[in-house]
Structure formats: structure tokens, C-alpha cells
Image (cartoon, rainbow, N blue to C red; front, side, top):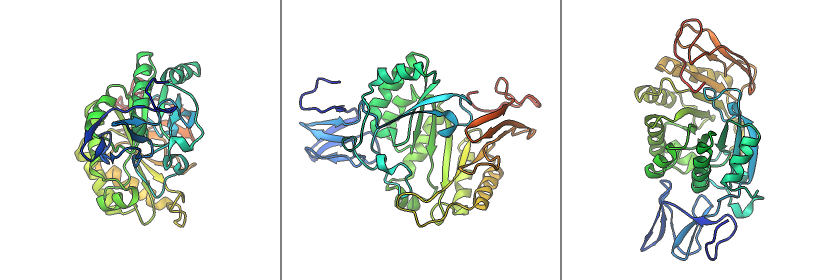
Length: 343
């Protein structure tokens, strides 16, 4: 796959790093790991060798699936279409509640991988009639080089690109991604900085900057907030989050309140009560957010889309399937209000 000396399958010289007196410093994300010879980054897939930094996750995904785009979740982006989903091992967070911890908290050397370079991924996506490629499941920021090369090729061939991410990335690589990423779903874990650090091992501020950058650069954006009992279900913080989103111009971008199910290191907690999710939704609507959804709770219509003006039901969903879509030309057919999205 590459001609570098001493490299192993999946390894390629990384981008965005510098050499310092203390070692090789990675500049992809705010962790900015400084690595001595042979050391691994905290995301488990960058290694220092011979004075350089190498990604260990180029062309070796551990997961390949075709998903409904609604699964990401993206409800205002190419509804009803399939997305070709790929992931490699590794993550720059260490979330206590991670649902994919078997691949996110390990290295590509410890997973069973496919051989799929960017051209292979794009060709297969086109063959399977997927309208987009999703970089998802683990944390695509940690396989930045693989993602951006695949996304660049996909864009040149008319395939859209989706990034499902925690948003923990430095501005320079993020601006590169904004040139090829068409849509993103970002996990905004909580609006409380202390809770964010305790839950994820990462800081909140860079995530908020990522949200603003995506919006400013014209990337379609949807935001997910997982309500974890005793962790992220503080309604004062939810109010602050929704007020901030409204103030910063995110009123047209969907916000998904998602139900927590016991996972990873938080298995002793209960699932999120439905009343907490509906209360959070009411708070968001009161703050002025136009499209607020409840996820992981089938059968209650929490992922249906209504016109923000006349309140008519526009898109009715059952699970990941669309039963009705009345939106035509980005507008409500009844009152002609524009419905934000990429329909």
C-alpha cells in the first residue's frame, strides 16, 4: 500500500505533526500527543518511528456496512438513501458509555481488518448504489488521512461524504475536511465542561468550535445529545446548551436527544426515562430550535419531521424507514416554509 521503509500494513506517514525536543507531536486533535520512538497516541492508532509520525489505520477498516442514512442519525440529508459506512479501530475520547468500545478503545493491530484502500471503498459504494460514504462507528478523526483521501476521491466521482464524530479536532485539519465533507453528525455529549471531561477525557470547548466551523463552512450539520441518567440529564445544562445553539445560529439544524442504554462502564445505570427526553425536547423548542428529535425510542413518532411554521406532518418515519415525505423543493407543501436540509 505504501513504499515507506519499516512500515507495516495500514501504516502511512501521518499529516499534521511536528518534531519537538520531547518527541513527535501530533496536531490532528486537541490531545496533541507527544510521542517518543515507538510510542502510541492515546487514540491507539498513531505511532512515532524514525523521527516521523505514522497513521496505523490507512486502508484497513475493521467495519464495513451499508446503512440507511437515518441511522447516523441524519434526518435532513438525502432521506431514504443508503450510505456506505466504514470505520477503523481507535478514538481520541475514552467515553464511559461508548457503545462501540470493542473497536474504539483498541488499535488497528488488535482488530480483524479488511483490505480497502480509498479507491476500493469508493468503487464499492458506487457499485452498491450508495449516495454517500459515512466515516463512522469509531472516531474518524483518528483515521484522518484515510478519511480525507477517500472523501476527496468520492467527491470527484459524485459521491457525498458523511462524518459521524465527537468533533474533537484542531482547526487546520478541520478546515481541510470541510472542503470534502458534505454532512456531519456531531455528538455534543454535555454542555458542562467538568462533566464532559469526566465522561470523555476530552474538553468541551474544541467541540463547540467544530460546530461553529462546520456551520460557517456550509457543511450540513445535525447534533446528537445523549441523555445519560445522573451524567448528562441536568436540565439547567440542557437549557444552557439549547440557548447557546440558538444564539450561535443553529436554529435550523436538527438536534437529536438520544436515549441511553447501559453500555461499557456505565452498565449499572438505567435507560433514560422517556419523560426526561420529552422534557429536553420541550426545552429545545422553547429556545427556538426548529427541528428537535427523540432517538432510540421506537414507536412514539419522535423522529417525525413537522413544518416549523404550520406544524403539518411532513416526514413520517418508522424506524429507519420513511413512510411519508411531503417535502418538495425544500418547502412545506402547505405553507411554503423552507425546511432546512439537503432533501
